[in-house]
Image 1 (tube, rainbow over the protein chains, first blue to last red):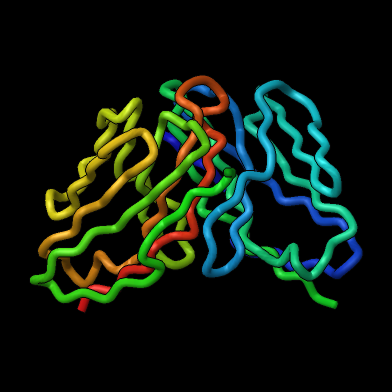
Image 2 (cartoon, rainbow over the protein chains, first blue to last red):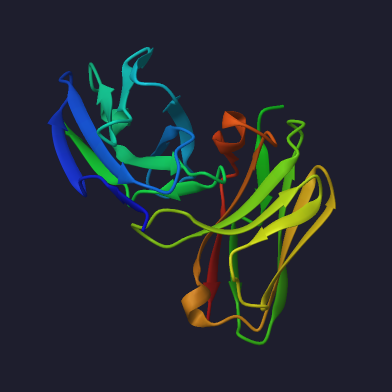
Length: 109
Length: 115
């Protein structure tokens, strides 16, 4: 079967760092993708990893270990506007996205 | 233009009504998608159009009927819906192949309420 797991909810403090983990088991792998979704809005693409290692984009970084079926999204210097749901999605052997349920991130002042 | 535009933003319809959701993109993308999203759930793929041809139908009930008039437009025709069809309907577009096919640009969504 296909399965993607990520925590349901996380809380962090403004200015701090938070790491959102994602583990997956899928039929085939063509990349792991992170999307951000603010409440009541559409998802927006953040980053993707195809090869093992760390991809950095400003305050956001994403890491992938294919052998462990594991990824994380690292958010630094948290801002209140980072309060959102973060969706992990894996591209399977047919290049179809399999979505995780999302992690709701709450930022406190 | 880097947007996907959806209309209407909100729609309330009765179970006997016929309505349509519309989506437009001018990003040159040749793949377009309809997703359905319920509250606190991930997006659920409904249909995929590739080069204006329906390539994926995820066993969606026939009361939802997609249409792709040209490479920039995507419609979703709604007829005889049920209250459980109330959800946010998201249109998205992407490149046709490779990793780019999974970098989706979503529209703002049409929030549908079926009474």
